[in-house]
Length: 257
Image 1 (cartoon, rainbow, N blue to C red):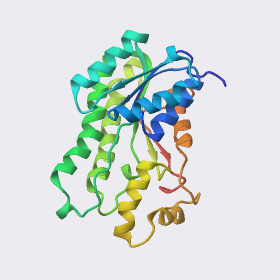
Image 2: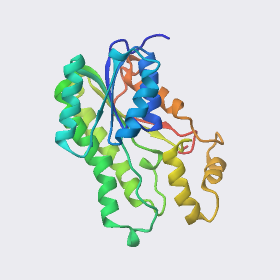
Image 3: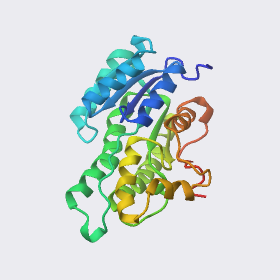
Image 4: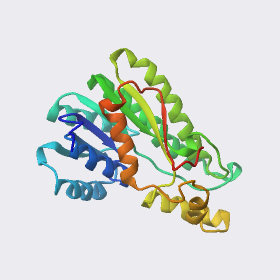
């Protein structure tokens, strides 16, 4: 390995999910120090065990936190800085989906929950992390292919994913003087538990198998692997993307083309 991230301090929210986990493994392999953050404590513990079996224990830590709560965020930021000093990379990756329903039937509480996690969450995490970030660092927000397009029945998730692009663009200009780069990644369908849940809902609405439907319309004719999304995270986290900020990186197999 080239050790592109040697001793860089990286915080990953949504760290127990497949994309967060894959990113943590890859960044660790490249020399980073990782603070893994998630609200799901059992899943986070298992993720830490899974990664820790192959990592030096002094380069991996984890913290249970809710990204919609300032006190919870302040706790993992202080835990990170107490261990390793200032933060170099923030991978804002926590997410939820909601339900599939037309706007007139969409539950208000579910809409609020989805926007809270996807929009308020990255806002608060950036707000509390930036004072403790090194100049020249990188913020990466996981948006989605639906952050650039629309589909019926998914109003909360799609609205939230569009909003993340707006937040990214504001942040990119606000922190450019510190040479901190801010970008969004936009995965298409990924072969993981999150997408399986989405597709089980969509299958009922479409009246056909949603997984097969996506595979037919994705130009590369398959779902992504979490490891492929992680490689895009590494690019944006590393010096390889030193002049890339305010951008939307599509990782969707050509679905948005």
